[in-house]
Image (tube, rainbow, N blue to C red; front, top):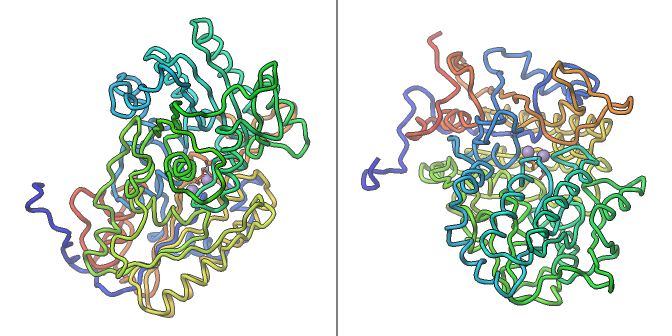
Length: 558
Ligand SMILES: O=C(O)[C@H](O)COP(=O)(O)O
Ligand SMILES: [Mn+2]
Ligand SMILES: [Mn+2]
């Protein structure tokens, strides 16, 4: 398609009408799995979601939400919110950050890029700092990519390297951080043998240190800043393995919330604060939980917390995290170019959108949905509403979260008849699932179901249409399993799974506004999240844009 003949105008759908309110509901972390006591969705009372499944067999199906269906490197990669919402909003499958970084490292092109050359200029006199999530979860970062980057940077002139680690336990099993730190320490020892002064300098659990998102709690970034930049933390150790082991001894401690620590030398001085003339790389490829730190590192004017010292550094992200803000301005690998998203088409075709979630998932139905782009396409056509999330708690304490509030906001938006698409993310299954608390996750799923009911009732009242789906699995399986699907025991105990899963997710359509002749096609058996955008664009009365993955629905003669 030449740029001159490109048009935002969508063709009318041959049969489906315009003007119906369409509610698009994304249940976060809600996959389909066999009934089992570790399937919290099965245990929970979810009459609304159950009725969608059993009520209309040709309007309920499963779609793929992991691996290559969402642009991840392999079928062993579980889905996640970033790639899931990108696929849902963009209607196409893009090679995602994980994959793009793999390619750039494998070809060595990462070292020829503008971003690497930019930071490289500080290697002679300064230290290279690498900050990021230390695990093989593959959601925000990957250990093997860090290992390659360490080796490559040292071969390209870095003489002094400091790694600032964030322990995981959320995309991987709790307790696995010790092994990851040991692996990293081995690698750093090898570098030291080759004359590179390479050490771990600081650390902390990802949810307590650095990896907040959508500006929910700047204290999280500040704790990281104090350790990474200022070299200050309440806990000081001589090595990181000891640090993680000791801090985990507290029975309440876990990898996700590990207290911040710094590594000190014999004289008690922090081994790696960030100072003028240093180079810094944040090695996560995923955006949402790096944007806040990127702002603190990059913005001269910054008032979210007192940085005390703002070092003059050369900073690059693994990727550019926000395409609209161009943040950070330097990066090692170009992000996927997600363009022509459904949201942009909708504003060009007179479709007014309302999008809502609570803070911890707000960017999922806006920023990720719109291709990692913050802000509106057209503020006169869109309204985005953020409900403040609880701050400073783990969500098993408040498993209902703001589900009902989100449902009610969506209800009011639907009843106002001011919007054609009302889009929400309901976070409970995912956010509580990540805590590993099975009982709380059951409560979470029940709350999510109630929110869906509130929305579907409103759809009923206005004669609208609903499309209910999810971005990836989580709450439907809370235990690590062997290949035959049985819980895998360790020391006689099951291992609780805090992470997402490889399961498919449901999608259901219906509502009084949906013509009786509409049903799911059965010739798209491998349909995935990227097929959903064409589907809801049809429900708005338009043909899907060129290049979009095919629709999941067909209109049959009765
Ligand atoms: O960032 C997180 O909370 C997890 O790593 C992934 O969860 P999400 O992809 O559902 O946000
Ligand atoms: Mn998610
Ligand atoms: Mn999640």
